[in-house]
Length: 361
Image 1 (tube, rainbow, N blue to C red):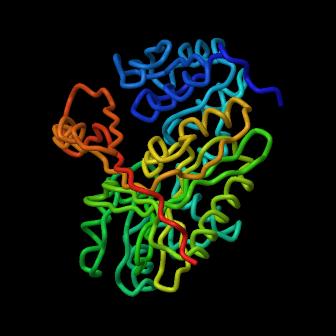
Image 2 (cartoon, rainbow, N blue to C red):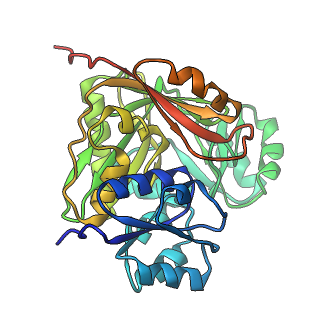
């Protein structure tokens, strides 16, 4: 296809920090951006061309966005599928609505992954307390109970480490539309941020090793402490997913690494991903530019990194560290422009760069 010419407008559904960084990447490539977001003065508006201040399902707002843009994308995976479908009747929408439909339901997501040969932890759909009891019995009495929909940064889930805890967990999560996942004895968590262009070409950044606390990503380190074969398998799994979805754009794939180096997929995110923020500092083409390139029909960029690094989120009051971080050499800082600091809220991130390690012989 012919790439979008400079001066074209790209619509972004969602005005948070991911929308902000997408808008910044689009501007560098000569594109204008319009943000659809109900919150006034959202982080993305500070760097975008303009904002349509409307709910995500507001039909007038959606129609205005579609009419003004050459292509529309989104910054979060809980955009209602009907919204993406409505937009898609009059403008190209990437990633495809099918990816949203799969990623929004954890049972559907894991069933899809297994169907294309990407292994996950064992899981069972749960709708009754009796069903939870049966599932726990088959999982050795322990598991991780989650809502099938929504939930992020540790929300919408409850570990069950003894059968007697099942009832409290079940009712605490609403008592319906749940999923029980087997606990995985993983050695570390990694993620792969990969992309597929409108021409079908694929690219993947190197896997990052992630550390979570209280269900929230705290840091991502590159290179991950994994064997080359494990890294190759992670990239291959991401490519399988992209091809199966006929995907366009960037995707995040979270994986568990087991003791033998094998992998189990945890979840997919059909968007740019927090664990890929390091690419802003350590790659010539960041995940945000890669996504804009993909949806605009430009060639994908080289995903190689020119420095090893550790990205850390600035959560809540951590944003107060900004001045001290600015005094350090080799530190890339991104403040999200949020005016209200709250516990657990992602306010920014920074990436410490270090010389690139030579690969092991």
